[in-house]
Length: 240
Image (tube, rainbow, N blue to C red; front, side, top):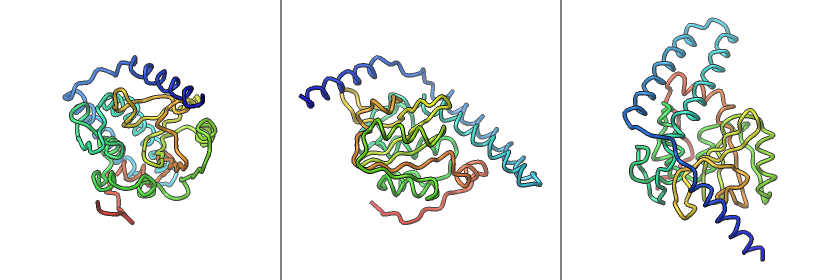
């Protein structure tokens, strides 16, 4: 009976996702918008370099964080929505070819201007990927917790952008100021595996015995690296 109920819920979720229409996408417009983002980031980085007090630098980081999150929410995530998923997908371009979950995460971050080793990080286990992006103090771990309780725990961590590593998957979690928690990921869920933004508490892809969460937006070192276009160092990686 439980299996039947789960199947009904899964089909309902899949149907609702299918009804959603992705935002209109234009490759030239996407490129132009990212170029504008680079210009705004460069100008803000110049302000940061001229800041003479820690408070002034901190204010620049606050503005950088808002700019970065806005770019993801309003430009990068909408562009990548509906891009087909495949296990070996490695496309660099939204809605062209296919993309695996790890490659979606690293490419989305790369598109904003974060200087990371896209392919090497995409091939790592999800927890190792997260540990290469955020400091340990910004990482939380959850074992054998129900999906609804897990989402509540993430919501309690506050608004921001997170990476969640699962048993066999990695995804973004976006917590809004109002407390809504969305999962943004390259989903393998049928009938149409693709990049989606969906409610985290009802996503079948979030099921996992173990979950590790890194709060990207809370990591000042990561935000500063993005602002100043500094390459991210890698550590404890395996080559596949």
